[in-house]
Image 1: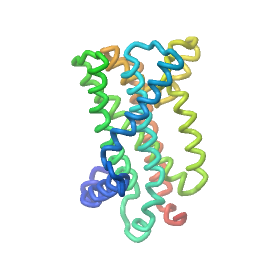
Image 2: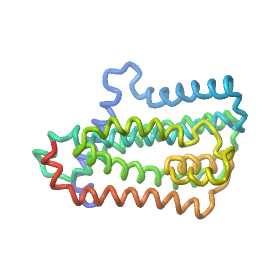
Image 3: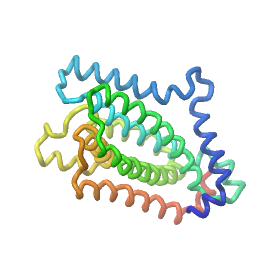
Length: 255
């Protein structure tokens, strides 16, 4: 894959630029929406859950922002990745090149937005009274795991969406359900222990918790939790790669 990326480096860079620019085409604020969108969502959720539901979670702004940050990145990356093949059918139907290139470019564009928003997240964490420690360096792990996980999910979705057009509708319902199952605005600790363990079956929640443990609690998660985070990233990425390898030659028949 690295060899192919090197060979098609110029194409990959141009695809990434195109995907990034297309998102803000004909908008007055342009790239500012990558920051304003999560901030406005954060503001609404904070007002609702503090003023109307009386949430008393410590460092709630940071807690809420961390959940929304990871979830928003996941949905943006996977939604754009889901259309990677269909949106570029006119290119790969005429030119023989790696199909996963389109998934990677879509995810790279989403990753750039994610990193921009992460910078704002650190600002809000400081305002919220979070103490910055050396453990923040370990945020590199959940970021890399989440990047790999999103690429894997995008590869799976892009292939399935090419074969079954109903995928986009079902995925919209799924991501809405996922938002409520990812403990973005509530604490999992309020549930019985048996239910808390069920949350660990949700990879998005696992990455959200990884962020919160490092930023809010100021320490690293357990070794078992770290391995679980890595397992989700590697397993889903492997499944996506296997699907692309198996059905690569059949993609052309469905465009």
